[in-house]
Image (cartoon, rainbow, N blue to C red; front, side, top):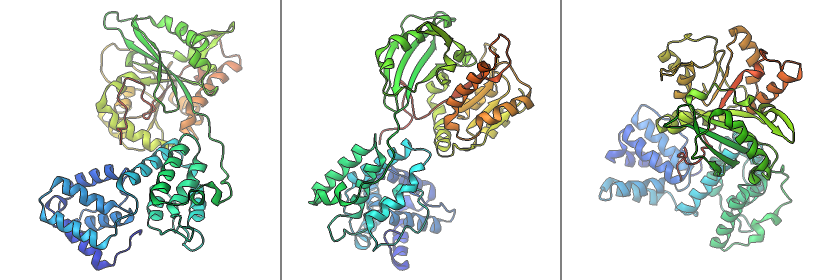
Length: 492
């Protein structure tokens, strides 16, 4: 626990909170806790309980674990209930028991937002192995080691904020964040350094003590270049059913996409390869992209999701070939992107998958009608069911009746793979097992490798049944939403 109170004092805080009408009922209390989490810039990690006393006690535990959290709760309650005597009493008790933290509200929130950005940049959490070492460097030998496995950098920062400055006058938190900036690399290093610089100036500290000269250089890997994405949207034209308004973006990493083409002239599908070839060979921003890797994403309406877009032929320097063997090619759902009501489940599953992408569970369907639609939706609604594989293509019907593929999208499943020509269920299960094993986040590149394998063994002839020539991969990153669609993560 960061701020330690004896049992009697903690009980006083619990009772003071329970005397506030809006905090005495769990449902209403949850609303104020959500407001508190938004104010802090991170979630409060504590176990909820059905019994009111235990639930409030757990909440107080969480408040004590994060400097400034109790003060922030009082500030929020005063905003909601400015004339409440119980709220005033809680504020006086917090002021009596808990000293004001040295970081102000805005600076603490900015730090936690930067940490969240770092965690999103490394969803596999591979960076966690370095935190104990950085912690030890910051606190020195006088403080104990971390007594548990580090699961959240927010917790480490809260712990360090409560530790007093050492003999050199440098708070351990600033030393830790300074080292973290050097380790994190692009694109989070500069904001971390700017944050440390402001704290050094505000506290009147010696910048050389806090900066890189205090310790030997922290060994770190060079930052990986940002991924490049060429996104092709095909929106149905309102007047001509067989033509589409085509928009193209280039997106680097998670930066906003730059528009390369905003079509006001509807095109038939047969013209898409020609447009794609022009973008790849003549568009300066695509040719001069920061790194050679490029993923091509087709943002398609439901009626086009089964189109073999990765089989489109392009001619580069006189060599004609399928785009699916040169670049990772995936499809994304235009309909889901346009339906804000479907975004919550989609984002929730993507967030889970980002942190559990190695050997993620797969829901495998061998034939249509295997489940009733509601039964299938219930099966897919669990957070950990984020990958769906089907041995059969979507329905080719013109109506909007939902099939298994659409039920998966409505349930928020971000990764769906299927065989366009239909498959024996047992054969498909064998073929797709290796494709979906290991890290799901690398699935687009593995699908490209499978397409190359289909052609490397003399299987390029028409009618070939190799899965690499018949695989559609829908891979919908809920963190990357091209303009002009609403971003799924609201601004802090």
